Length: 372
Image 1 (cartoon, rainbow, N blue to C red):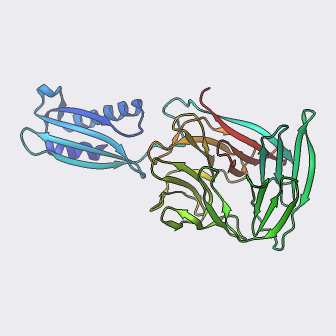
Image 2 (cartoon, rainbow, N blue to C red; image 1 turned 120 degrees about the vertical axis):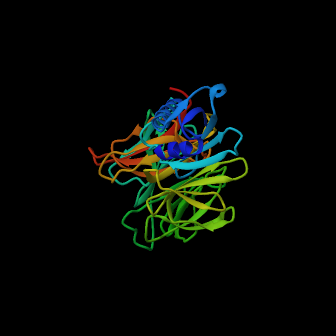
Image 3 (spheres, helix red, strand yellow; image 1 turned 45 degrees about the vertical axis):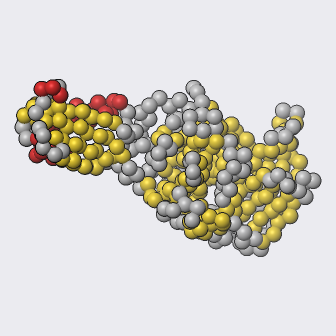
């Protein structure tokens, strides 16, 4: 702020100056008012007297804008008939994880699906009548049917695999239209037919990381817990991106912006041409997108950045440009999030957490409603 005031004063000199501020950033009205008040105080301390335009010897117009790294403030100063002088300064962005400046009008609803002692890798909900769920854990795939007001086990299928599992095992269930589902694990894929016959085989094929509307496949490292960055078929012209833990598509008019929880601990954006880092975001590594009838039509779910020993939260964001804006309050869990996947339909997500009090794993369906 002081740098901008000094550059304005160097152009106009002391005297009567009119000041106009235009906000083209995500700053709230309260923030803009704060910037206006502080800048006026600093200009006054440098000998400038702020007056209405008809009384001013010089005019100053400030535009508040922003880019991926922070705020960009542009001052256009003109003294009399002289050519205008433009000054550009950058300002650090407010921590998006601290406060929601506008009312949080969306609500992330958390519906418990399943709880068990064994680690849950993923859960898929088959919205049939009666409904069914598929639970994937390190040793088996179990199917349950909702009958008599509770879940009853239908069948359990052991998972056969030729490679030892990595220490931090991950897995994903994807519902299919031509058969019941596929279950992906490192170096292994299991497929289920409509008649509940399940077969597992070794496979290095890529995992699907998109949904029914936006398809993308990525190769998973068989000995680690992240995707290598090799894609099939790719994001636009990008067939290789940074290694990542999770990926969430955000549809645009002419392209898809992919938000990545990268293996380097940062959040990245890939648009088919560029891979940019959003270093200021202090999110966790699990991201998922959900298509809704609220707001922009799709929201991004992001976990908090815990160390695995404290409870996590998940919050919804929108991306009016390329900078995430929080649109819900954080939803609390009883422990760290161990898995977060968008469901195959794309309209909800499944989160798994480990309850720090009971030690059990808990799976939840996450959906977004448009009002309190």
